[in-house]
Image 1 (cartoon, rainbow, N blue to C red):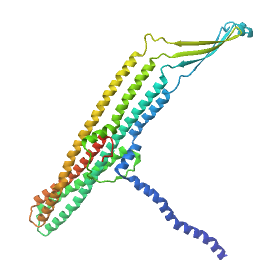
Image 2 (image 1 turned 180 degrees about the vertical axis):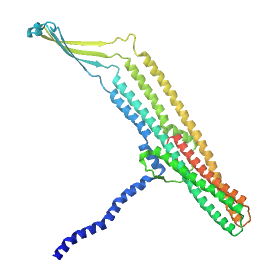
Image 3 (image 1 turned 90 degrees about the vertical axis):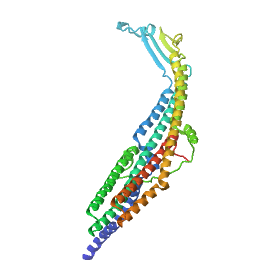
Image 4 (image 1 turned 135 degrees about the vertical axis):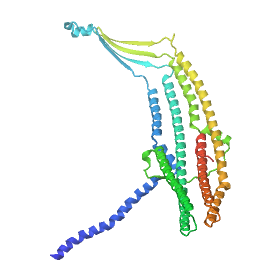
Length: 436
């Protein structure tokens, strides 16, 4: 009895043991893809950020529906007029029901059944369709311009996050470095080599470093929140982060080459040029609408026991209304579109000139810092710290050198961020992110 019981209970226990051992491995296997997907979603590069914004930004998605609306207008513009079914019954003895006999219906009552159709002249349908297609092309270029603006805003905000992140890293590093100075000063005070007044000044200076860290953390959180709104709030998790550094990327193209590229690449310039074509299509449509259409009708008539057919046709005589006003208006609209296209090209050239000059100025500032000012500020801080710790320099000299070094480093990061923002502005002015 005991052997049989042990045999019955051994296999369930063995199965439970196997499941217990296999469960962690299975959980780990299923958790790895999810963790990898989460890791990919929470670390966003600049290119990935722009791609997410182009896919998930709600304002852009709303603008893209305008293209679909225009395409629906193309369907409406290409529709032919519906035929008209006509029917009537005449001379029915409604007020004399006694006369309502088969003989009366066959010989006296009249029945008509016909079909009418409007024949459009002047190729109105073809002109309507072409005008609708040209308007769709204009709207598509305008939506592309919205994408260009969104990419610039995302890149600018992304640089803001990088700047806040760089400031935070520097502030934390500077706080840790100055904390060592505070610790050394505390030991010197306890040994009697430092006055209490100098120790208090150093500790008060530590407060500034701690405030810098807090301000940098706040700036980073706010910059990430603003960037998330541009990306599409639900496209990234709340705990997402950006990947990248503040860096210097020289531009090799000259101003004239960039201007020529802007006239070719910018979607707003292309939209203005397509606007001329759309205005010309509207003018052609207005001219075709000046042609009078023909109403044709064929009727079958049964009266007096006879069946007959009738043909009808009508057309307006264009003595007065030949659509002169609309034709004149659309002709002036062509001139307006041509002027707007020239103005848009001028705006593009002006944008390139301004952004290129801004980039050159920012480039010069970055070169000044990289040319020696950063190294000089760091050397000055290190020398003052070394001299102060050995009693060869005053506390005020050391604190002043520390403040100069911190302000120089922060200004250098600001200069790098300004240069990168100017570069993004130039890319927006040219209309492409691919600049040699």
